[in-house]
Image (cartoon, rainbow, N blue to C red; front, top):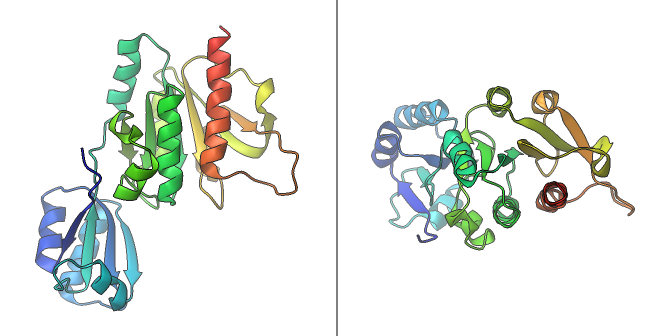
Length: 247
C-alpha cells in the first residue's frame, strides 16, 4: 500500500466526498469564507467530527493540484481504519491478552507514526485514536511509522472515554501516563491492558484520566519535566512487555 494521501478540492467535490461517507482527516477552509456552500461543507465536516483548519489563500494555493480549490481542500486518509472489535479479535486469534495503545488527541503526525511503530514492535494488537482534535492516518504518519501502519490496525472512535468504558466491560483495564502517578515499576501491568498516552502539551485529558484504573509515572532524573509522547509510549509499552515476559 502506498503512502499517498488523497486531496479533494473544490466545493462540490468536497461536499460529495462527505455525503458519500469518505473518511476525511482534515478540512482546510479559507479563513473568513462564510458563504452557503462553505457553510454546508462545514456542517458535513462537523457530523464526522472532522478537524477543520482555517487558513490563508496562500496555503490552499500551495496545496492545490488543480488551482481550482474554491476555498476548500479535504485530506482523506491514506489508510483504512480498523474497528475496535477487529483489534480484540486479532488478540483472540493469537491466544493473547489484548494489549492496546490509546492516544488522547495526539496532533503531531511524527508522534503518531512513532507510536504505531512502537506498538508493532512491542506486540500490541492495535492503536485507538479519537476522531476529533487529533491527527489521522496521513502520509506523514505512514512514513514516520516505518511501514508499521501496514501491520498494526488503527481504530478511530468518537469518544475515547466511552470506548474505555465499553472495553472495561470486555475485561480490559487501563493505565495512563502522567508524571503525578505511581512509579510504573510499582504497578502490575500484566493481563488485558490498554495504555493511554496524552497529547504533546496537555497530557491525558481529565475525563479520560478518570476512566483509567491506574496512573503510571515514568521515573525522570533530568532538568525538564516531561518526555515526548511517543517516547513515553515506548517506555511504558516495554515495561508492559517486560512484565508479560516475566509471567
